[in-house]
Image (cartoon, rainbow, N blue to C red; front, side):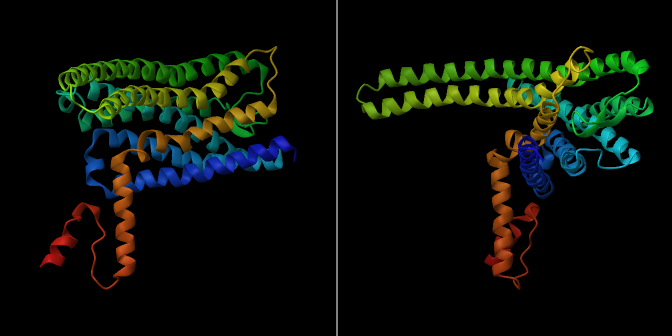
Length: 339
């Protein structure tokens, strides 16, 4: 193996481990926490995590073996199945992120009417469309036999060998990426930029009230004023940072691969194999970053994970106490101890 192949293999292994563990934690939080299950955004998050988990378990090992062997790792039947799943899961995960941004936009822009505008039923309908949308493109590519092994990406993916099919394949590829990547990116930009404007407006109002208060409190210590001003700055930076992470991670991970797939359609352009594999690995890395971007770094998920760890430790320390491990009945143990 060349040095580039070794580095790509190591990078893919790291992405696989992080993605597997992080997405499993998100699913565990969804199962154990009644509050998360009741939230509308939980539907989008668990769908995104399940897509990432399937992509991690079924597609990443195939690409890893292809890099090691420098050839198609499985037979044609398994290869078509893996390519079908990749097309379906990647598109589904992109649309799930777009749905999450819409949910966030409604929650921030219409906070008083959020419960009526975004109901559990609405979330299920949105996810139903996401599945139908993704399944349609995956089935079309399967029926037209456009799912084959591509040495350029070391994976079973959308690929065509026959010259007579190149024009149809070009149209399908452009429409597929426009309806998945570009559509999701446009929704992300429109919704999160609107959220950013509302957040900045709230920050500005808070800043005005804070400054008016500081002017009235003439005897306040200078260090307190400095802390208030510093908090204002951190609040503005926090809003900018969150929006940048949401949109930036989507672009950094998916854009190189999508642009490469579109440039590949030009007959005069030859894509370097290492770059093709790297762009594929970057797309896989989105599955590893999503749990941290959308879930695990939030205070609610941290508390759920901490509760799970505490309950496991108490069960190990007091195995005969009849301790109930369900988070949905987290007060039962305290009540039983008091009685």
